[in-house]
Length: 183
Image (cartoon, rainbow, N blue to C red; front, side):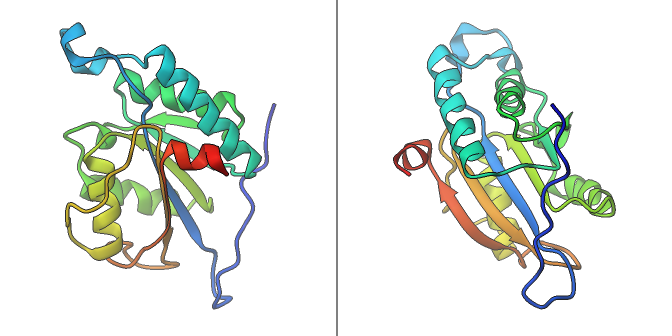
């Protein structure tokens, strides 16, 4: 099934198009001591089930991402594949920037290039504390250690029309899976 690119959201100023960034943490994963390499830890059955429920809820909310960019670690990749299977995007790419030692500055360079393609809605699937830290950097320009993204939880940010999003983005959504299931 193919989908058109996500709908364009006019900005309040009428000058451009609002960009939305969704930071999505991977679902519940197997315990670290069960695997010799952390990157090989898969989602548990419960993690898959809860992630499918979150994906279904996002689909009910008519969210569609121009691209889902995921960490290469297995649990994040599995989470992203569940989002794809729910019809939330037709595009999936891996990025080492979303792994534990990922670099937001490198990702920002990638993001500048991505913006030129005209898409307006992007999902990043990754890990804590990186996702919470990135949300803080994009919102406040610094890490404050205040935002925690629960497993299969979501942070939604509106990014500025032009220029760097660092310290200039607006937080519009912070939801745990439990909150999504109540809605």
